[in-house]
Image: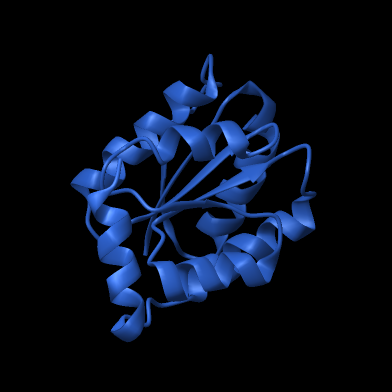
Length: 142
């Protein structure tokens, strides 16, 4: 699976930690911020633009609190993103909402929790079915 990741300066340490763990697990990782982005808007848009071009890829955006990246991502039509700080929400947003991007706050989650969140997000599959009505509505927005 291809995972697109990026961060601003506040999320850089956590991003690098997650990136290395994903590479060790055999994921194909595309880092959109090898050096810290000046702002979460810049790093998130780099991830989102890549996701829009690469169907099937998943994204992870990291900033201090996760909220800025979330707000940025949801401004882009066709992107369903979730700001998460627990494993269950990460799994369910993929399974029921077909989210292609999660945002994490490096000041909110520690390294171990962040890895568990990413693991659950990437392990989940979209259920479709009755959830597709909601996903269609979300995709028409922004």
